[in-house]
Length: 614
Ligand code: MIG
Image (cartoon, rainbow, N blue to C red; front, side):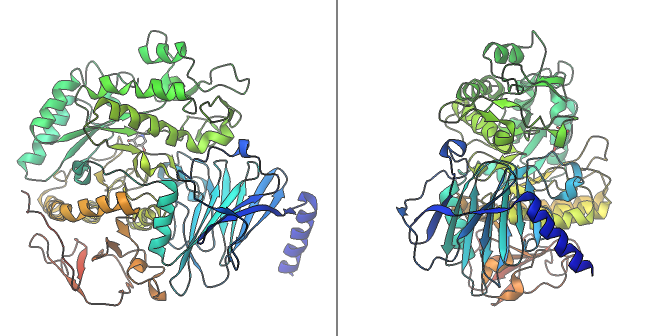
């Protein structure tokens, strides 16, 4: 009875909203890829493509026997593309998502959102957008689907279909075939861009805190790492280093001399990473505000004239319109003097953009971006999802101009498909719970399958109070994240390795020593990612794509091709075929250690290792 009622309601809804199907207008193709343009496709509404950096070479017409043919339709003002993928497909991708690695029967919304502890929107709406789905068939062949638009969109995946439902105008869809899941991710990277090799120090351990409140405290933290013989490469400065949260300023009391602090850190072989947010305090006399106002650089309200003002940490703020080339150039130009204090890396946060009290914690969708240089003017609804991506493009350019001979390191909370070219990322504000520690594995794997290899989660959990046991477990897991950073929220207990007593400190020490022992291998994998686009942390099914028992494995994972990592909390792990042997990295008993994940090497492999660092 219930089912019949549902069917009637569905029928009625279909009548009311007149879901009408639109024939594909044009198809162009190469041997492994097809691009579908719906009727009514208007290039000015969709170009330039933010996802596709390398436009594929295609010929007019369809490839015969092509399996992945979207059907275009509309519902009200929404445009929809439905791709029937056949049966027996395991789906992956869709970027930054909570939940399972295998994306069958999931739905997410692409609308970059400051989603504290993933608690809002059912956790199905986070900081980044990747309109991308990968399928893997039973025989191990794979395919990829890209919905090439930036507008707010949902991606609903069943066992057979992918439905992209966009609030924007008709958009094109790219589908491609690949011999393996690896080949699909490589094709994605060829289309959307690859990382540049980051500095090796960024692969070391990072100690962060919201916030170390004074330079003296930072120096003390650095000293403790060295005194306690805990390997560490980086210390992070969160927003409290600023004067009243004004970007590109320094607190006259807490951080009066950033040059001296950076010099101190460098003298102890640390690097420093400092935060820069997009919101600019609206305050006459503040240089950044005055410059940006004189340059007419701020995002406008819907009247296209008045600066939009929204609240963030500094209070009332204006926001750079990063769609404008002049704004990006101005923003890049702010970095050289900042970097000249000895800053090594930059952390761009809050760039969804986050606006306190705004709808979905952001700015109104009818705000106005002026574009330029090939980017048409348009609403915030169109450009919201690429705000952070355009910001880090400009940040990176400025950092490179400041230090042309150094490889930049930028960490961004928000981004868009392809944005890995500009910045590494982390999974935002997680919780200090076992559940979120475990969730970090499929989240990082999924980002890697969506083109972003350099990812981590806040080790020990950003929000809340972890037990000493959880701190040890998470530090031990983080060893194997591509980006290994301990971070925690203001008001929560400190999480540096020594604060929970000697037993936890020793667990952290072994975890850190393991990381540094693996550094040559991690560096090699990172270099390879910069050329082949493959993730660093990989799902177990990469090791044997035809093995149906590996497709949902999301607790154990691969580091590159030759190491399998099995956390001690992992249950029901299926091994890929082959001989896998536990190894000890720093003298620990990998297989039986109660906290450190078991590290297994594939028979016949060569693993480059560094010295044990004390
Ligand atoms: O509204 O800069 O996700 O890592 O410590 C909070 C303070 C702003 C959010 C980031 C978090 C960072 C915090 N930021």
